[in-house]
Image (cartoon, rainbow, N blue to C red):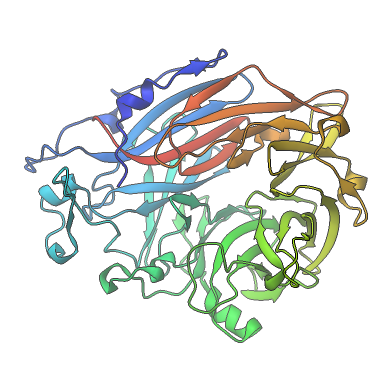
Amino acid sequence: MVRKNFLWMLAVSMVMGLTVLSCSDDEPGNQGDDGEGTGSDSPKYGVNFTLIDSDQQKYKTSTLVTEDLVGNGEYFTVSGFESIGDKVYTALCPLGFSDYGIESGAAEGYEDLIAEDEETGEKSISATVHPNQVWIGIYDGINNFDKKPTIITDNRISYATSRYRSQFYPTICAADDGYLYVFSNSVAKSQSNEKNKTTLDAGVLRVNTTTNEFDKSYYFNIEDAANATFGKKLSFFQVWHITGTKFLLRMYATEGKYDSTSDAKMMAIFDSQSGTLTKVTDFPVAEELADMGRFVYVENGKAYIPVVFQKSASGSSTVQQPAIYIIDAAAAKATKGATVQADGGITAICKMNNGTLEKYVIAAASSEASYLVPATEAEINDPDAVLTIKVEGGSTETDAATHWLFPNQKYAYGLGYRQGDAGVSYSFELKSDGTLGKRSAEFTMPRFTAFGTRDQYLILGAAAETSL
């Protein structure tokens, strides 16, 4: 369990001019009473939020205690942030019981699942005992993360997130029809104890964002759809809305796989109207792939995917260089784009715009350093184009980043995830000569496990022990 105190987070050092806007701990959602009659002195857990204004290069932090957030005694974190109108939607993900929850009696009946830390003596149940349910939190704008959101729930799918180590990758998508589509890959099927394991298949629901209720008439079983297309029940790792009723799913290739990325190397188009899956053709086969970038770019019905290849089948040291693949959602067909000479791989792509100039930007790495590589539209779509990561060729050297976010396609934000420790954030903008220039603010930032953008804002969140 995470052991990061919120007061420590407020003391994170700032370098090179980033400004803290505020950090409120006296709002209603931050009241620190122990709850009626619990008598527990154990620390409470919650979600620490960081909101970065990329235009102003300022940020603020806040916290929400999530102990017993939905009335079942468990504490929660968040996964993904989607904006529709003035609302921000996030998936609420149950994490089990903290020492506070156990001491307050909320885990009664699950004593056999309790583990005790040998050093601290704190007790916990490290996974939810309510895996057959999904929750969505609804916020009014971006300035209320320290208050309890409006919460809606459904029991037709499991909670909505994808996991890779301690990161929570979003599986909720705002679509053109105004609905919020809520996908669950049933990651809880990977739990070893039956009490923590969901019995529900990977599936999708949708939220009517006018009434903010789940549409009771809408449900599709993703594993059944995969069985109809691939001859076996498959789940997925990531999902992106592409256009209209079309969603791109990064599928697992093996039946019974619900977590990690090692087997998630197959692409399919999900049609939210028919509930069918169509395999993407002409995409590299799983055996050829080492990995895919988790940060893709979507435009005009197409998704731009960074692809990293395995070493040659002959066992030699020759490596097929990474490349961008462009997937046409309507045709369910992939086309190879530019190759990137990057022995360390490529992880993200986006189109950036400075008001007068547009360039695609790829996050890439050699064996020694990391870079942002600019490219024109003609280059990025040319299967014969070869992009280099040399500074003299127009690339910009960066510090290593695990995540790249592009608020308003105006800035490239590199975020360094350091597991349980603070990371570093820095940003770049597209200059008039088509290269990337580093901006003034660079700062040490709190730990994060969830991420998203709204307009010029970056929204980050992580479960943590609080002082409230």
